[in-house]
Amino acid sequence: MKHYDPKGPRLGDTTAESVINRSAREAALESHLQALQDRHRELVRSAGALQDIADVKLQLARTLVNLKRGEEAWPLGREALDTFIRSEDFESAADACDVLFQCDQPDSLSALGQGIWLTVTYSDGPGALCGALDPCGRRNTGRRGRRLPWPLPPPCFSPTSGSPASNART
Image (cartoon, rainbow, N blue to C red; front, side, top):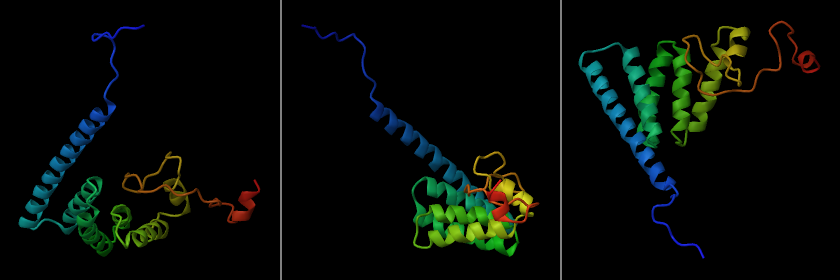
């Protein structure tokens, strides 16, 4: 018969650790959210550039999505998207579409489709598009060096072959 040793090895309480880690992450996100809100107020008060305000709104929306507050994030992301479209910053507009998709709202799937359309339509050409949409992450970035919001399957054509079927056989 084995005797209980109170000083012996103990199993870790992983549930408590995950709650603590999640709480710390949420606290950091809330702090980041507060800083972004302060930055947004400052930009609006000082009549900052619309592009800068839209960038901060998109960051606010992304932070709210990470806090599982998609309903609050949607209007901010939508306003940022509209500003990016007006200023023809289609890469940022595609990024805003990804944030809108992550909001998990009734129009989120439409936002994903619009983001894909923007990415495909306004790329720098077939070579840049093939590199930007590489699902392996070797070069999954847009012109401004930011990662594109979603990996897509690689195209089955090369810019030189011209035919999807001829590439599929090789």
